[in-house]
Length: 229
Image 1 (cartoon, helix red, strand yellow):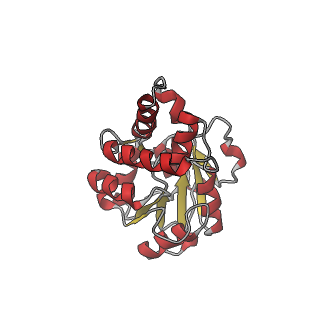
Image 2: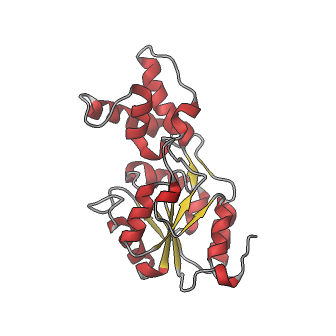
């Protein structure tokens, strides 16, 4: 288990919140497959997973951007997005799995009595079946989806709702995520923020510019920012 000198640890931390895709679980294969199926159905050549992975954190917007070069402002995007959602819904439980080290991290948080939860922009239509199917989330005290509150990240509302569900003041929470929106939302909510360097960083992303309080390249490195149990 990772440990660190007490001088490096943050005091007063009472809860940990995480983004979902690219932070706790690797769902890129299913997201990529859902978009690639649309390409193949239209007679276009299949793309490798590597083409999709870096944009998996952007959901339908990212996947359709890679598959068809479209943006949400393009004509026909909404119809293609709904087709993508149907494809993803059909395969989303096929292979999504926790990143290496995440189950050990969660187990250690539980051992220390630190409540934890998930705040994702993924709609409840997808988030709830995934989190219910994976034993990893049995101990989560909050699951806040992209449609749980009127606003999604980078607005702080979802993070504040998760803190409310856990019964912890926002300033005593850490928010961990692999996208700049996560850090913006966490800072706006008054939380300490941790950028994940192992997630779905886009090709142009530079997490050192996000303003996070810390960066980790492996899940278990988060423990170095927590006071020793």
